[in-house]
Amino acid sequence: MRARDPLDSDWRPGAGPGALRARAAMLAALRGHFADAGVLEVETPVACSTAGTDPMLQPLTANYSGPIYPHGTRLYLQTSPEFAMKRLLAAGSGPIYQICKAFRDGEAGRLHNPEFTILEWYRPGIDLQDLIDEVVAVARLCLGRADLGVERRRYAELFHERFGLDVFAADPVDLRAFALRRNILGAEGMELGRDGWLDLLFSHLIQPDLGRDALCVVSDYPASQAALARLNADGRTAARFELFHRGVELANGFDELVDADEQAARFEAENCQRRSSGAEPVKIDRRLLGALQHGIPACSGVAMGVDRLLMLRLGATDIDEVLSFSLQRC
Amino acid sequence: MATYSTNEFRGGLKLLLDGDPCTIIENEFVKPGKGQAFNRVKIRNLKTGRVLEKTFRSGETVEAADVVDRDLQYLYSDGEFWHFMDNDTFEQVQADANAMGEALKWLKEQDVCMVTLWNGTPIAVEAPNFVVLEITETDPGLKGDTSGGGGKPATLETGAVVRVPLFIQTGEKIKVDTRTGDYVSRVKDE
Image (cartoon, rainbow over all chains, first blue to last red; front, side):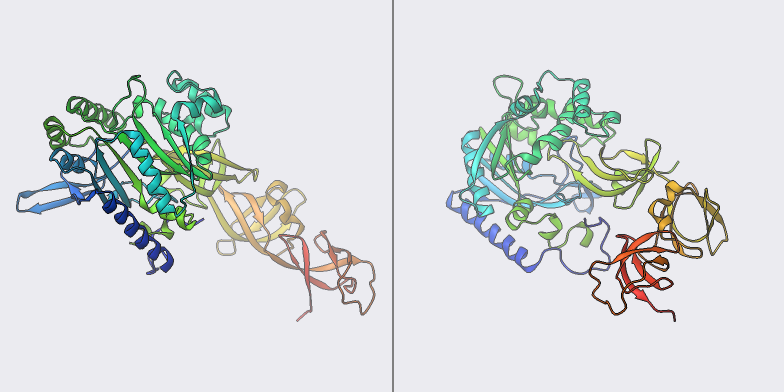
């Protein structure tokens, strides 16, 4: 295992010439796909005056001072380009995509680098199923595997079939007991909410087997994990899906929440969660709420991890192998 | 009480878990895009040698174990304890048979080896990878046999028994790989 220390004396890139060429080819293929599909490439600011409130994402920050903010202001490096792209949708952009850098504080590991490349796109007027079909096509294109089959699973089904757990009824006490029965050491002393326990069980017991030789789409996440997705008619699940291949999480998509009032309520609720977990509350993006009030078309959107697609394409085991200069090298 | 956050986790870090000193073998950061981050860690219990997997919520802190590895010189055994000395400070410590483990088969007086100390007390002793020891007893072999095939048992000055080629005689010195217990070569006196 690679030690995770700054590699101060190593000037070399982590990615070899083959990985650099594979990245360039993948980016060209993606741009080709979206050009053919009539989806417009856009750019939005990496450094913004607001950030997402998701309590599980910590933004990196930067400082600006000069004209417009003569007394200085904090800028957040985007954790994803979602809010800015939704404002473009509200302004009538039509279908759009972006390939950009996103940043997340505290995330470094075999599959994580705090700065990484996101492919994100929005399709007004198409439903989640159509978007899933396109995500599958894009994944096959990027992985160079046109033959890859698709498995469809519902989040609750995965827990129920394999463990007999009802994710909607189980409380943290049940979930901890289950984790201990499955020999997840450390669970005995861990303080987690229901979704935290579900994350633990999912990442330890379910995810490693997803999409062993296929693309696995997991959908209908619990409403408490809706993030920015619309809730389904059943009221307890969200119109959210994720894509996995060989146990690696590759994409997260929503039938987008477009209701300004509900978005404002989720912002408040998430900032409450941030405060109670000791994280700093984030300034709410009033401009996004303004765009939602103005109205954005019903649409579906998805973010994919380009670096991880490249890892799987090349059989890399560490993200450092597909980045020119990961955090240790930059 | 010294502590480490999960952000400091790395191979070789020493933690105190359930009262026992442990060392991290492997640390993996696990985080769903929209969910809770964890550190899945493979750990060796330094007292029992057992390897186990444990999960921490990222950001948690864990008590550090005061464990250090030091090169100490083996002085003598009183039958119950094996006594070691730090050649810089002349400080002495004693290890019990449990801490000695396999190393007691290979150490002779004055050898320097790595001793793992927990709160100043030896919990593990590692013999050097290669040691040179004299043969105190082995059946007379055939002179001229250099094939090395077959071999015969030989008792070393520390009491350990290893298989040696037939041409090796009592009183000769041999080099042994302590990790496998295998004969490596004959050593001529300087």
